[in-house]
Amino acid sequence: MESFFVIPFTIGLIFLIISLTASYIRWFMALRIKNKVRLKKALSIKWLVVSLVEVFRECLLHIRIFKVNKRLWYMHMSLAFGWFLLILAGHIETISKTGTFFASPYKAIFLDFYTRGHLETGWSVTGFNYIMDILLIFVLSGLFLAIYKRFNAKLLGVGKTANHSSTDKVALAFLWLVFPARLIAETLNHTFYDGGGFFTGFLGNLIYLQENYNFLSNAAWLFYSSVLGGFFILLPFSRYMHIFTEIPHIFLKNANIEVLHDDGITNFQVHACSSCGICLDTCQMNVKTGLMGQSLYFLRNLRNGKKPKENSIMNCLMCGRCKQVCPVQVDTLSIRMNERNRMNGKMNYDFSYLDEASWPAFQSRIVFFGGCMTRLTPAIREAMKKIFMLTGEDFIFIDEYEAICCGRPLLLSGQYEAFREIVNRTRRRILDCHPALIVTTCPICLNTFKNDYYFQIPVVHHSQYLNSLIKEGRFIPQRNGVKTVYHDPCELGRDLGIYSEPRKVLDSLVYLQNKDYKAGDGLCCGGSLADLELDVEEKMQIARETIEQIVTNDTQQLTTGCPLCKMTFQMAGLYPVKDLAEIYAESMITLPVEKITANMKIRNYSNMPVNR
Figure 1 (cartoon, rainbow, N blue to C red):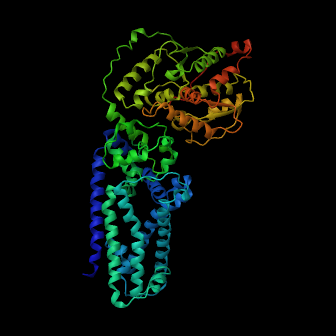
Figure 2 (cartoon, one colour):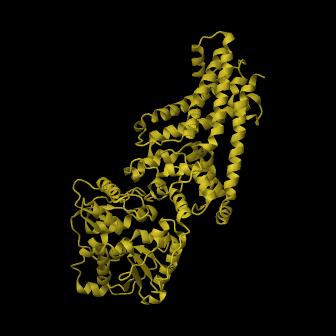
Figure 3 (cartoon, helix red, strand yellow):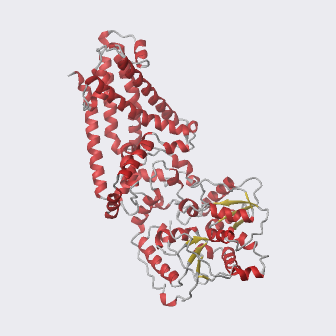
């Protein structure tokens, strides 16, 4: 039979469908009951419409990539959307010529083969030929950029390109051959059987071959079918699994499914990653030569079923920059936390030294929780005590004489059982003070309080508290002209979305050079508690690079809202570094006695944020 050439394509398509179905069923069955309940609750027309719109925007048009890099966007969009339009236009043309809506898949893919020799005329035939040629050129232009990117990534505005695995490289070769193979097949088809559009017909007319060489046309169609079939067979084992997996990933993501502690949703997310490499340029771990702990390679190893090495699991700042720029919105941090918990989650600890009987039973309207890092930065601690006293607040510095941990270091290392024990004890200790407000200078503690402590009272960063004092007129700032740059701590900005309050406070106190900000774009100081592999010099290198990127030529002072960031930047030794509380407290020297007395009043803290 002349059309035996469709066999490779058909085998590949059947294999792909079976593989996708088996994988998705297996991963869905592995979802935790909690996530299945969330998915069930999310089922609605609105959820369906929102998800379908996102599928169109991101799987085909790649809008998020457009916002990051327009040249890279065109490459991805032309390949994805162009291929989709080729398939769609092919099916519409098949319906118009056969009158059958449900035709065999290969009929639309190889329609030119099945209609060759039939010299039809009319506007519809000419129109379809031109449309298909335009779409093929559209896809080939993206393919050209993809090939050129492998040799000169900077042309597309990319600093680093991904080093793909052997399987990915073979699958990539098949993908790159698909559209040239189609062009060759259609061109030779028109060489021997006439027809064609302005592009394939033109190329076909340039080739002069005798009719007895028409076997070359059949060979070209067989090659095209084999390339497609080969790509379909390789797809489930390569990064191109994302082409289909991104669709269920979007539906699950929009159902607020949690990745943490769930292997089922982790599999969906890992295979939704396209290894596009966008996260490589934004990762500050590039200071470590040959690092394979970056998110792209970490996810690739999980996708390929490889058990990540311990240093790869722990060698990450967990700053969230990769998650922020990911066009697929893969929750890279939670996936890494799952592996850390798998490695360290069952360690045994003795907490008998945390004897609750020794807890002081003081009651206060404000509990100030400094945290471990604030205890190591005494200037911040003393500044906050001065502010509370001069504003007449009823407060207690709960960890002034004894270190009390929020548990975040245990959480970041994957030791969840120990973390929950610390959380329960610290939570009870704070609540025993019967506070109306909890204030902390540490974004790490604040993030933990917001997400894991379930307080029913407001918990705020000290920048939010200080800003409230200024807004209420309880403090009139004594402004100086020191040219200051503010650094956005990762957990305060990217995780908690607190950007404006620190800037409002500083703008009242100093000459702030970076009043504007881009949400999610903050740089890590390098001193993250989450990375247990980087040595001191590597952390200092990250700190120095961060400082150099955010300061200007005439910057006099660097300010931050995180004690850990302050410590790290001070060790880098490039600029004077202060916490905003220190600058605030310094400006209170001239506060009159009558103002202090007036400030001694009962405040209502109910309007402050309780939870995210």
